Length: 499
Ligand code: MSP
Image 1 (cartoon, rainbow, N blue to C red):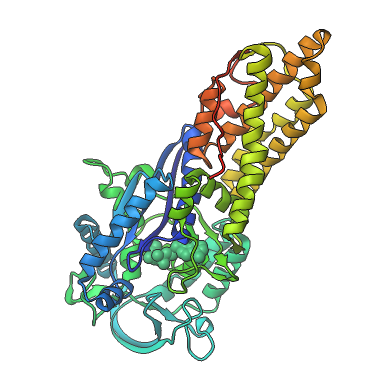
Image 2 (image 1 turned 120 degrees about the vertical axis):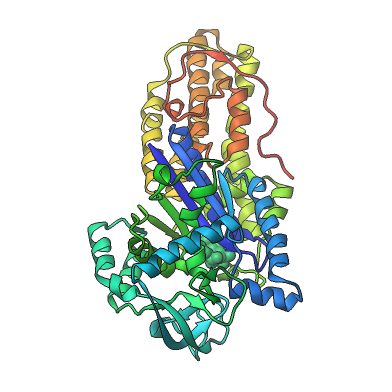
């Protein structure tokens, strides 16, 4: 099996913030999980460097767009290891190999008659780089995403015949009900298509920061064409001397926030169809991270700094919090208090304490040795279905539900400690075999949930698995009672210490 997943490529008009980290972490969980399953994985992220959003931000700073792009692209690149993103490649759209591939692709669309010269007048948001349709215009002709006044622009340039794809797109959505998830977003995209598709501008005349149109060098391509194409151009040059297109296209799961639904659910499949390529297998759309009830964004200034959280706590904790707190797909609020709460109750207490307590008991009463005897069927029955449940949920990109499935078992194991009271069993020699069983069952339970949690918290889970003497992270090891009987544990520092 192969698995190709992507994040949006992020604008370099500002530095990375939690919203960017969010999508990247979600994609990373999927990538790591598929690697656990032995799949051939390719995980792509990167930066979107051309167009008005970047040109205008650079102008405001009095620097060249390239300088701003270089500066901020580096920050996005540095963010990846900090949030433990295991992307296989990081594409920058200013890369000359991308530029060349965009020109070739677009020349192909032009030669096949999908592009014509025309003129169009409409309301435009320079931050979204988007011409808004009547239903997308906010009150008083403002941008509903950025809250700024829209500009009436008249375009004299090259157009892509999007209207020709109305029917093929409707058919795509009907034939593949899971093409866009969750269903609310699918319905939103479909009703946009059904409301009638106009042709869209695919080049800009008054802008120089972009990919030059090969047949009309006075113009550059509209940034969204340049940007969307990254998902296929990267495959051409990501691996030295090898074109990965055949191996990985169509992408399995493309992740985006709901702000860029139209581009990915409508324009992108139409562009792919026009270019004679398969459309992506699925698009998964998540909601907004909110702070104080509003979309978190640099321009609004309401951001929780991921780098601060990582410095004081850990990347694992941040990843856990984001995937756990906000139901993946819906909007949800995040806050420092909410983070600290989950850190101490769920990570430090429910999970971290269960692990250290269990290891401490085996160390104290059994000199670190786990008995090979049969495990307690009461716990097997509840832990056995976990691996399949989690992989099914992750196949549906239900990240929050997958964590909940694991947490249900962590709570169950904590109750098991209370119910069996190993400290009493330890006082009674006649209960030695029962104590062996309870401890072995707990060790195996903790090991199983930890393998399942590995894609969410790659570092702390490895530390714990090593202390359990079973460092295997491949998915077959997520099954209860799967890595052989007995074994030895070693001491464990607190996984989630108080900062
Ligand atoms: N460059 C375009 C995307 C081109 S993809 C071919 C762009 N860039 S962006 O920098 O504005 O990033 C938008 C993406 O960042 C969102 O789709 C989402 O993935 C993520 N988020 C940014 N702010 C966010 C929140 N407040 N909440 C959730 N996700 C957020 O659009």
